[in-house]
Length: 270
Image 1: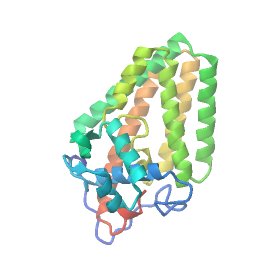
Image 2 (image 1 turned 180 degrees about the vertical axis):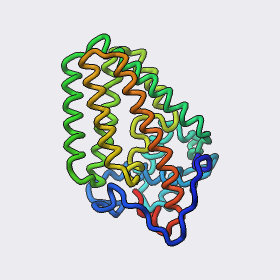
Image 3 (image 1 turned 135 degrees about the vertical axis):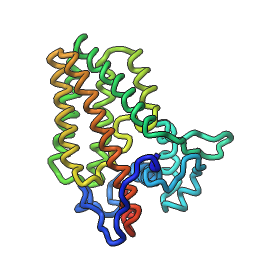
Image 4 (image 1 turned 120 degrees about the vertical axis):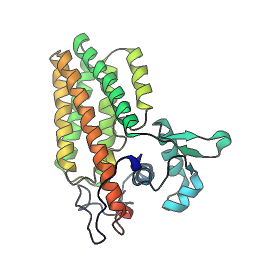
């Protein structure tokens, strides 16, 4: 996938752009951060920069040696990437193989997920939502608001990702439809489509904080539209929210490719 989105190479003496995490968490093993989340993002970085070629075989031991991470978080990271559709498990436990995707495949996956989540939100608005679920949504939004008001350390960003994933899962539950939930689960299995798939990588965009605040404004608008029973409006909001993720994902790919040419820059990413 990284080969499909190219950018002008960075000069040899270029310095990486400042990012939302740089000032607070320069080290990949910052205290309190999830080892699994770090391992997951570091493998994703290898995919984004093209250091792992499509079709390549990935094994736990090879990644342990390459990344200097213990085996348990590497195993969990590989299982997560398989569940997201990025990797295929090889027969007889021989590891995983990185799947190959075109830029069109990625956009299609994002659109499929946006369509299903938009349908779930529209059904929630039109059918009504249980008060308990609305209260959960308000609590999640309040938690994200609090996280975005403080400096985004790696640990805080890990909590943000968990809240973001829970928020999107809640939209599916609000639909009240087991069939829609099953289709959303299938959509989440498409590569790059699940909410927050490359969210931590997006923290390295220079405009990351502004994008996170914009996404959170969309979260609030989505819940407001569901509360007001505005089905068409909330469906459009969810689809635009997904497109924001897609645009940021492509910017991440370009940034990661440029940083790869800056000595020491990729090593500094989580």
